[in-house]
Image 1: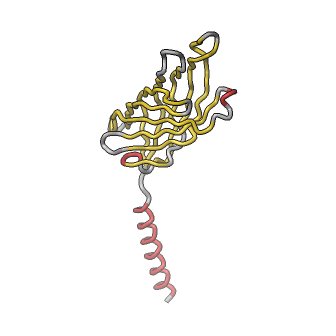
Image 2: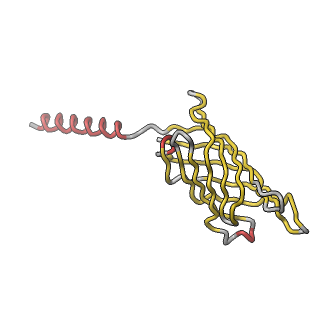
Image 3: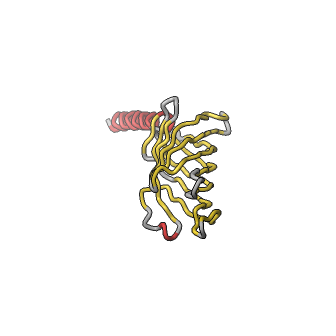
Length: 171
């Protein structure tokens, strides 16, 4: 009797392990590259375009599209220290999209002035959270992307540009 119970328990545990392994999706990480250009619409809103490329060593380039980008400053309470928190919404023509949250942009240099006041800035921005997405970005498990670029609020110059690099992992 004990051997029958043990055999049933063994089969049940093997079946449970088999089902649990089926439900765990494999995570795959991609190298991120790209660029973006935006214009300042208001002091807290930027609109523009982003070209994004995701590649994987084993399979090569898996995503390369240009889409729309909306940036919103969500917290400028530390702007006096050169730090701003943003969120972004990106949409691509084939239906893929994502939303970032808590992106931290830090001024690293002053690069342009208007009548002695700074109006152009070199920026280091870190993107570490994509809470929502569709298509390829539906199940982002981690993101570590750096955006290096410039932001201008000078008379006659209202264009921001960044280069992207880092990693993005999905299930």
